[in-house]
Length: 104
Ligand SMILES: [Zn+2]
Image (cartoon, rainbow, N blue to C red; front, side, top):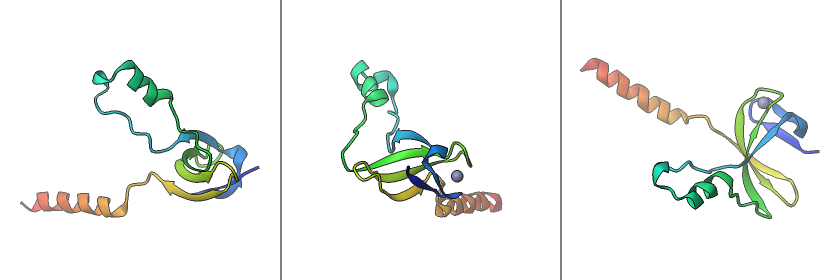
């Protein structure tokens, strides 16, 4: 059994998590112009590599939050985690723009 380190809850058993498949798949912007093959590739085709792979996981029986993990599909070793949280720098930038608008 894998021991997965939830970024918010800490190490938990694999059975508490749901795997959401390959990470970093961007939805096409203009879906009306896609061919059926391009749309099918976006929906169904995944890499399934032997080796290092980035996946999405959800802590289904815990905090129910999504995160990304980099995992070796041969050894099952999880090499790192990443969240979908907005960087603090971007939030500070938006607040700064809002304050500038108020003073004008
Ligand atoms: Zn959690």
